Amino acid sequence: MVAFSPSRFGRRVLFLFDFLLWFLAALAPLMFLAAFLFGFDQVVQHRGLLADLEAHGKTVWARVDKIEPEERGGRIYLFYEPESGPTELAIIAPLEFYPAAWVRTLEPGQSLEILWVPPGPYRHARQAVPRIYYESVRHHPGLTREVISIFLFFLLVVVVRPHFLFLGFVPFEQILDKALSRA
Image (cartoon, rainbow, N blue to C red; front, side, top):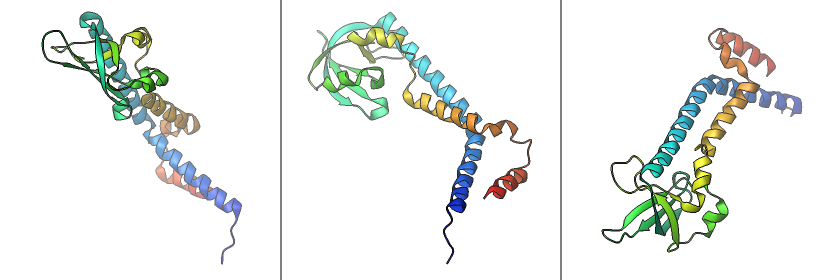
């Protein structure tokens, strides 16, 4: 029977952690690009919604129909009944732009004053913002926590293991020899 050695076990765990960091460091440039593109898209979409709200937005009272806090960052479905015509749908999303305490107080059937983009040839038609939070949404950068956390995680990987700069310059066998000599 082989005796358990904490130092040997610790070295193996460090080896696995080191190998995982090498793998993640190789993905870091791609993930930086992906996080940048996702973040850029979110900011552009957010600014586009604000532009549509300023150009075509209408302030109306709508009735909360359904609250889905988990679907694609959270959504609130509302219905607006105009004086003439069919009932219109409005969607408030994502919910992380609004205080969680406020979202928890909402109930189906509750009336809510919203600023929304009516149906039409607009990019953000049927999207809405609660009137009381319009100013805070205008000043929000439009980035969600998921994109920020992906970016920060891979930034940490690059700080801890910046070897992705040298991929292709150092032979993989040399990297493995160095890594395996620690195990």
